[in-house]
Image (tube, rainbow, N blue to C red; front, side):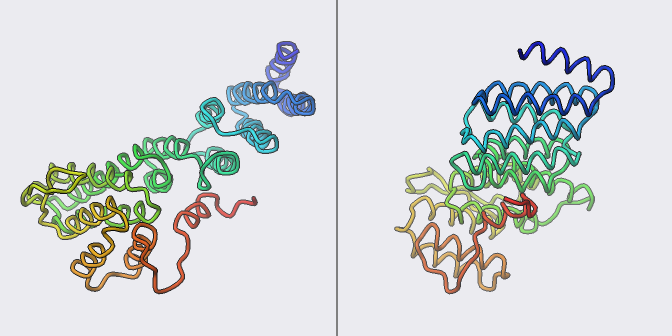
Length: 314
């Protein structure tokens, strides 16, 4: 039946009857869903989205892709390798600069947050979206998704930060100060740690500092041996913010046992932090070291999810 339906749909599309084809798709899909033929419904919707995009009917293709995620949600279809690959194939049909891509990102995150294991959405999906936006030159959108992605995403995040530093060097026609260059990595490191994603914090810090040492060799002062279980040596930087971030990561790897060390390093390096940094410091203290914050806090990941979904109705 699917082959016969596809033949009729192709004829309708070739004749320019896009509305008729769209309605035909939905009629057959509804029949499949009522019969619990979810895989057949998704296959038809996916092939329909491809055909509609080939005819530059991107709005109708978006509707097909959106119905895929709604079908998954309504039938509690979980996020797994197969469904994630299907959704990414649908995303790749659209230009990342288009409104259709942006809208499909939102519904995909919503599906993966409802039917997956992560309230903020599937990290692998965020990674794909972040890399796509990065390759398209949309770095701010990329960072928002990479922040919610995998440890590999954090590495890509570090590369984007280095790219920003490199641009600053090119624009100034001279090197920027090590402290100014290094400052851009502190907030992301603390954000990752505030949600106890220590591997992410390590990945972005290592990527950024290794790249920065190439761009600004004078940022590195020395390398000292250490008895820490997680590393054989600690690099001493000429940028205090990097020394601070590195020690905080080392403390976080020890967990609550290093709560005293965390408090001490914060007092030593951050005598008068700005409000945003102070809030992150408190969040890290609470999440990683069980240090109670002096005031109520919002949820950083929830705030980021809200901004990604753009107030979309749940």
